[in-house]
Structure formats: C-alpha cells, structure tokens
Length: 308
Image 1 (spheres, rainbow, N blue to C red):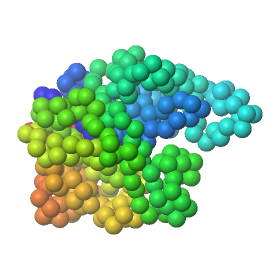
Image 2: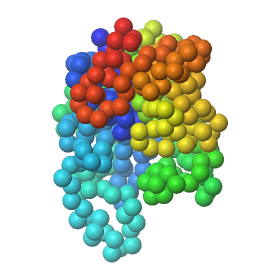
Image 3: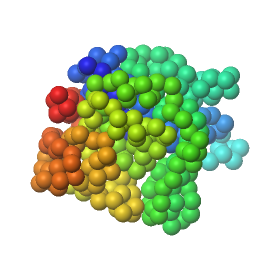
Image 4: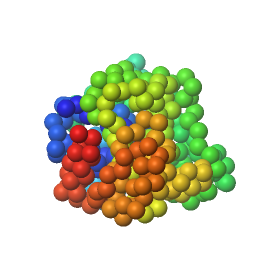
C-alpha cells in the first residue's frame, strides 16, 4: 500500500515517526510545506523539511523537537559581534545542512533536488517532496504589522494577534515534480496533525494540489491537531479563531471537507463526531496525543485502519 502524507511542523514529523514503524518507508511519500522557508546569514533554511528529516533519521533534539540533538552554538556566539540578529537559533551542526542546501541551490539545483540529496545523506528511506520548487512564503498580518512567518512564530513567539494570513508567491507557484503524480497514484492520503492555516494551508494553496485531492481515487484521512479546543503545541487554535474558523476538530473537518473522507479525532472530542459527520466527513475516535514511540505507532495504526 502506498501512502502520501501532507506534512508541516513538529506534529507531522512525530506522526511520520509512527507511520514508518508500521509500513515500509519506501512506500511512503511526504509532501512538505515550504512556506516557512527563510534565509539566515545568507543560507536557505527549510524548517519543516529539516524537522521531518532529522526526526526520521533519529537525530532530532528531543526537547525542542527541532534542530539536532547535542548541538553547540559557537557560530551564533561569534557572529553577534558583526551585528547579526540571532533570534533564530541555528546550531553549528544544523548549519552544515543549510550550507549544503544553499550551495546546491546556487549551483542551479531546485529545492526538490536539494531535499533529495539531504534526505539521502541522512538515510531517509521515504520520498520527501517540497510542495513547490518556486518561492512561496507565509506572511502573517498582525496587530503589530505584517510579519514574515518566522518573525511571527520564533522572534515574536506568536504573541501578536493575527488579522490575516497570505502566501506570497503562490500565484506563480507550480507543484514540484512528483507532487501531483503522488496524489493521483497513491492508495491513501493523510493530512498530518499540522496547523491547517500555516502548515497545511500553503500546500493546499499551490496550484492544482487541492483539485488533485478532490480528484484522487485514494482514501483521504486527516488527524485533527486540535484537542478539546486547544493545540498540543503552536498557535493553530488562536489562528483559526482569529480567521473566523471554528477552533475545534469540527473546524478542521470544515477546512478539508471538499476532499476529506475521514477525520481522526481525540478521545476528548468524541462528542463532536456527529457535527463532523454532518459536514460529510466520517469521524474516527482515537488517542491522538503522541508522547512517545508507542503512542506514535498506535496513532499511525489507527489512521491506516480508518481508511481501509
């Protein structure tokens, strides 16, 4: 069975860690958000892609759930003297990934090609595809002004009230090679438990992706990142509310209802199942909090069972 996952952020990486425990990695394709990409110190950083790679390679920092375990920060300490802002804490070993990616891009490679080389270097068995090779950036409009996503998320710690979200460059962004083919030919599509607005939203906004999801013959499932009206991590609940979406599993179902068959919701939200099914989406109740490897595996098994 071939499985394709739409992924963005830490929740997606944790879910994928469970999924590769229950299926062959070579049958898995991951389509990643690149709206979070940014340049720091002249280097191209792809946070969501790297979080997936580091997690599946078993080298992720377990405390932060991003970056590499056992990091040092000598470069950041040294570069401050030249006036650089260092709020985006790139570790010394993590910087090697970004140097390699940036050099490939300067030599004419695409983001897809660079991602493949990095994934191979870390021994990742699945296929990892950025949703587009074109420049796509998430912009957050807040009460403090218009912010690049990393400024909103990391520098300002999501403290600003959100007024709107847009994806700069999306009108010209074409799906990367393999993205539409993966959605058309796979047996199962899973939308990972990621922020519907800024993690999955940029993927769905790329030309042809949402239409491909509506047209696919695959069963399409999603895991709600909202539990009892809150997120385990991140600002998804507050962003959804600010943008007029229902900040609950019901709102997640409504956001994806044009292509979604099944929504897996947490046991705490079992009472929401009738409202979800009223939106035309089958609700499946499971334990969705992923504290360790056994919980990640159990959730992956529950999602695959729900679509079979």
